[in-house]
Length: 589
Image (cartoon, rainbow, N blue to C red; front, top):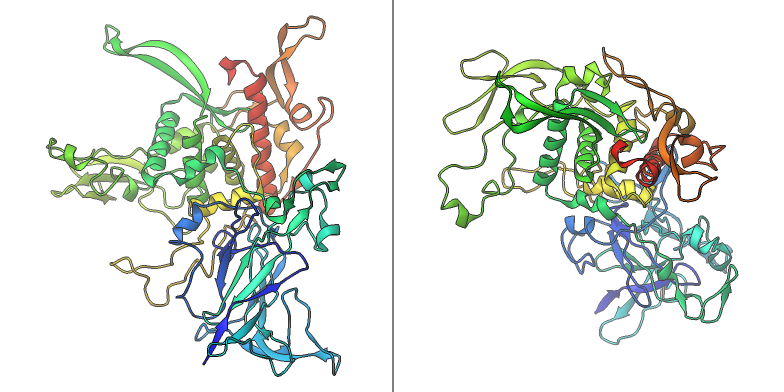
């Protein structure tokens, strides 16, 4: 009897590793501690059972360690393993034996490549942000179960057999700022870390892992720095730090509540503008909660101008705008937020209550209010109409397009439309919203944007396209684990120009109103230390572009499109928020 055994096979002279993953392609990338190992896997054929390395559900992949990997910028053509459209089975063709490095395996007797069956390729347009997957084919060995001896491949005379399916691992990269160009060590492009790839022929599964091979030995000098302990390739794998953006892993009910809080604040404002970073700047009259005037109106206290700066509220706004292309809550989603099966009420507490969760409608944004201040892009949904809502005897929300007795009238949309999507200035606001949810001292990166979108469900990378009433995938449903769908920033997004963007931010020149947005002078009022008097800080108008992105005199321009343009736009907003937070007068934030 013979047993096909996982055969370790080195993709390079040095072992390092990658995975294959849910946040990147068809697998996941992990890295260990100490010597630094990690693993991930991909199914080559149709087999789905076997000794998995993911230790849990698909959703669990979204909440583990996530790493910096090589990604497409958008517009490239990628190679995709070919499958039979009728059966979904891999299409194998006879051709040159390709090894783990993508090179042909040469027959020394003929000086020509060996001919073997391996999966064919087709091509597809690459979406900006999706991972570049490795294209080499691993090798494996076969061990005779009775004798324990490794079988010889009669074609080559050695012990290795060709894997029929490409490795398709995500490719970890080393930080060029921290380590410089490591290609002299690896011989690989784009600061790729060298990979070790294995193929399990029993389960038809390729696995990739960051191994414990040394990058720098104790006492070795690299880029002018001497290291006095061994540095492994796994130490060069970069984990993406989310900071406050981990709020994206909160339950939907928490994010829905935060969204409603933001909408209530917007609706209560008497004017809406933008601050220097692009955040919504709300001017609101504040009234006493209890005291009233003789005519019964509440007593006016003050007028407050403040940006929406709650990380959770901004993240909720980001999710909504990226998914729907507008901030309007549809009528069929205005029922009370379901915080759990029992509406957020603990069972022991439920016994003490006679009423249940609130039956009040969730707020929906005041469309005319937004349009008044030139912010119509945030409420430009299809099929806007007047509608009425009520509840039936069982408490279910009923939506009608005709007036009815006891019904509550609203103006908005009754349901989401597939025609509504983010376009144009929606991306400008989305970049600000996600930046406002991030750590002020952090940076926005492409990996962070892609992973966050996957966690939030903006990218479809886990689960299936359709489920039955029991929650099981229906026959023919698309597996997003095997066929992930990434948000395409190239569709509808205008080119980002940093200098132009920040020339139209800052201090207001004209107030918003009458359907027009505010205009701005490109400056922001901050505290600047008086060079003549140490310790004395003076309120000064400073150019945003030159000071946040330059030396105070000249700014560094940037233009970009697709996900690289969006990433730069969100990072620029984040750096501006940090500048404001550091230098602006607190009352003006």
